[in-house]
Image (cartoon, rainbow, N blue to C red; front, side, top):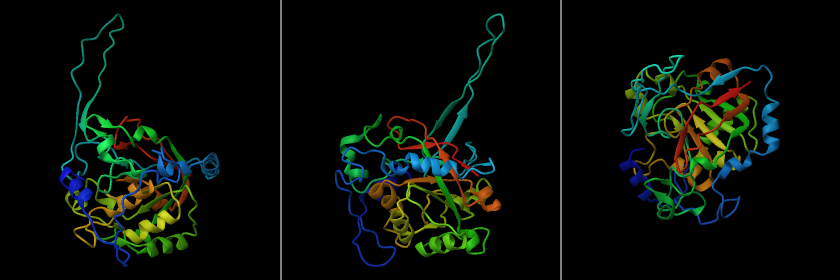
Length: 314
């Protein structure tokens, strides 16, 4: 989201009603986290030693799937973001052994391009962010004083892939398709899976097939989960939700005046992390639906998100 969209998101308001896509805009109150007044980690607290052991027991073949995309200037961008890399000229060879070396200089919105984890300081409702922290008290030009991604730790837990495209008999879901709670339930039944508290849930929509193939279409919208699906995932007490698209939720949404509400339900109200622009094609191709999931976000002090290469191990 660019600055204009973010301002619109933070200032938008709606009145709760009854349909699956109506959004309760209620701000989280201070100390509303189940993990205490000072909690800055949210749902990753559900990854207990027992969850790590459960994940390890899923490794049977020792095969891993890289879920991250390559970072380069040709990848799709939304909302005016950019990425550039420069390799400065090296100094002349030095020492008796004539050592010479290079390094990179990268300019980008580091936590919000390519494969990206959204931290709890990324999205709020009005002035309030997860656990009721007020942005006027923790956001500074030099980084977040609360909810920075350095607080997260490591994701090592049971992961599930829900292949929604296969459920619908399509290679790629169409733009604007809302993935509902019923779609998630039907996929779980078809794949003979159950969600456990602390799990990571990923979905395959096929939208990732457009990556660096048709960047314009890729960024113009997407299939994604709607609010009924978001609330279903909250009820399952998951830790993280990820997808092979750029914003995890359906775009355009049903109400043009409600912007990115699924982000608010998951991140702001419930401390559930979101992971965008995944490459789920290998898991879907091989029908690997249950695996050990591993991801260690960068410790970017005061950062809103993190790049990286999540891994599914089967």
